[in-house]
Length: 370
Ligand SMILES: *Cc1c(COP(=O)(O)O)cnc(C)c1O
Image (cartoon, rainbow, N blue to C red; front, side):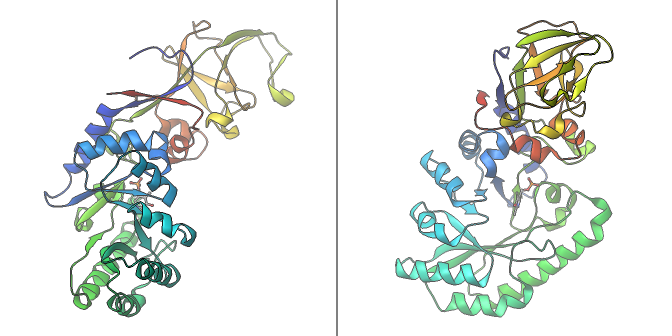
């Protein structure tokens, strides 16, 4: 691995393959695998990640928004792409790029069918989402009659899949709630199969659903965070490898005397001598202000260096008083060692790995290990 000479996000595609194979090993042979690559592939690089997973034989992709799907198509991705949260204004673009919409309420179902009919489409694949307890997006069980009657009126669309989403798949204290969600989805699937002349796919599980609820894998699973190396529990983390390492370097070292301050608004005032290192990474790169003032830390020569004072837009200062380091040395912000994971850094500010990794801004160069 080359030493960092600037701030870089290193993406390890071998780790991605490992995670993909690990999650796949939890499935029955005929269960399909959908890879969630929204938000730039959880902050990594959706095109590189999707190209590699396509090579490895993934069955489906999902993104949140239409423009994310367009980016994948323009990069040559030919695998089916489910758009989890399309807005009506983008439906023409969605069709033009052969993306498949999640239709989650009567309004967007109607708008899509009208558009598909006007464009003389035939059996265009759509996906219908049911709300089973997350209360975010989706039809209710009581809408089944309505959906089926709308679908039967037209040849323009065909339901490729029916799905739902677990609210607390990673939290085993909520097991009863999750099992209830699974039971309602089973009821929905039975009712709808009886009314449709063909069999759509059914799917419900995200990463923690795959790991904790094998009985709910149905025809396909939707894996996001697990592919990127996080299992939402200590036990599951052991089997996965974080694919992204955020690295930077020491730009400058300062000796701070007792009574001096560091950074904007003089948020840190020293009551003894300390040595600080200034790093070229700030809140515009994805290290939010909440990581400042001793909450967040980086790792230099295997030792933790807490952030001193406020996080600036383009820089942070860290305490290296007890670390034998010099200007130009490499710094790990988060990575794959158990002491440096994004999950650990995220926990320091009461957030989750998902937020930290998807926050690494597009200004940070991506570097791929193949
Ligand atoms: C983001 C998302 C996923 C992936 O969840 P992970 O916990 O990252 O595996 C799956 N399904 C839906 C509907 C999502 O929005």
